[in-house]
Length: 246
Image (cartoon, rainbow, N blue to C red; front, side, top):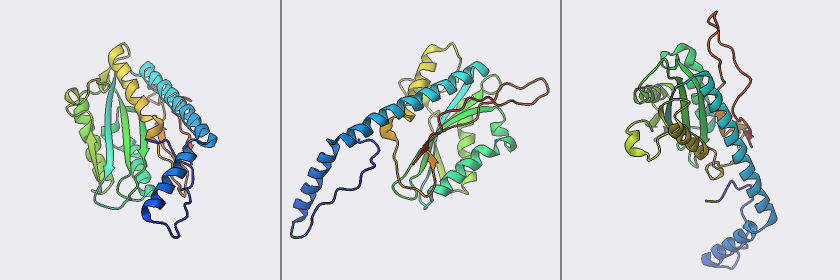
């Protein structure tokens, strides 16, 4: 799959030509563009952006492990289907989901998240790939929590959304399990978690499209330190990569 394309569709003369000739002309122009220095420079930039995003996410999760270990990690895909949903509406729905954490017992012990927005080519195809982190000393059973979050997504979207829990049957679905209860000294699962995060930042997973507003394709939640003696939480300065995609 080609990385994010910023080029205009090649203009191919159509008058007096058959459909096959027009198609072959388009392919030829596309090949020329892919061999251009501009395109190769864009490939290098995408490699750099991908590596930087992963580096920032890695620091974010490592910091979470220093504040809370073990971590209960759930991975869930939040989707739409069967109805038209604009990009703005999808972003508002996700914001509502994470901003309501203070008023929802599901998120009482949630300590962070990473989400990647996948832009759909059709209005009902926008979806979010999300990894939620919970304080593992306070909660158990990632499967139950993933279901609770998924059902809450359906409520937030007034029934327009649906979800797929990656924690359900995770031992059968994945050869390398990087979700569930993970402690800081669990080298195998920690490594698998990092592989999953690296997948989220792959350059061929990020689609750049024209939009009316700037949107972060990848976003991390704010890091909160452990509770102080007075019961207040103090935010840290470290946050995940939030580069605005244009």
